[in-house]
Figure 1 (tube, rainbow, N blue to C red):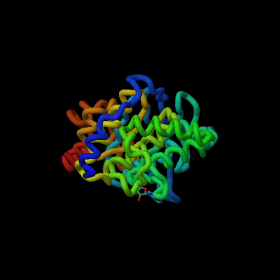
Figure 2: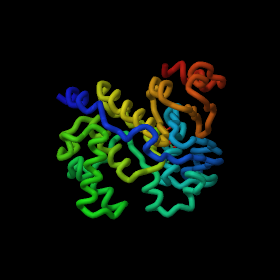
Figure 3: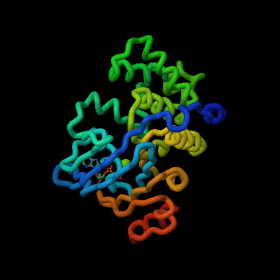
Length: 261
Ligand code: ADP
Ligand code: MG
């Protein structure tokens, strides 16, 4: 049943090409440690407005920590992160919550609220919208991700793919300029992965700036503007997908690709 529903939802009506206003992202010499354990070492990364950056690398290489630093769920030790030139390090938390959205592997939806309720809740909290306004925006965002018919379902009555769409709609509702995705298809049944990846590719075409940690090498190859390979907390190699997959230079990237492809 869920598979049929997913197919139905797979043709979302996202904003037209270039309609979303993604920001440019610059990460400069970012360091991060958990106690004495250095997790990120001088990470540098630049992503033009409206681009898709895919981050690949072995488990434990610091990919999630990097994403968490970008919206300061984790506190960097040093370095800087800039959105259209504004330092994220100096940004007030509520401003940051609006400008940077994040989607997680395990959806992180509130189980006791409907799809609509989940999106409305964050609009009311973060944007201080009235109930009526929040409802109107939430309905629009949910329709955009293909969930017009499922707004009054609770997470447990939705497929994993649909739950992930709710999480994406919830993030989009705050009109972020940067969206972070951390292995958002890793917990999905295989037949539901494609629809979510298609939705993400569409968001990129709409103009969102996206940083996507993923194991989906085909997605990275087809959709990314740049691919960043991390190992042991550092960027080992980065470049266009043709170079990273077609002509990897470092032995570590070669070994990684031979294991995952
Ligand atoms: P990845 O997402 O690439 O798998 P992570 O960023 O989750 O890597 O983790 C990088 C390293 O930091 C790993 O060695 C992990 O064990 C460690 N780590 C992650 N989170 C914490 C934490 N909250 N406290 C201590 N160490 C952590
Ligand atoms: Mg991770």
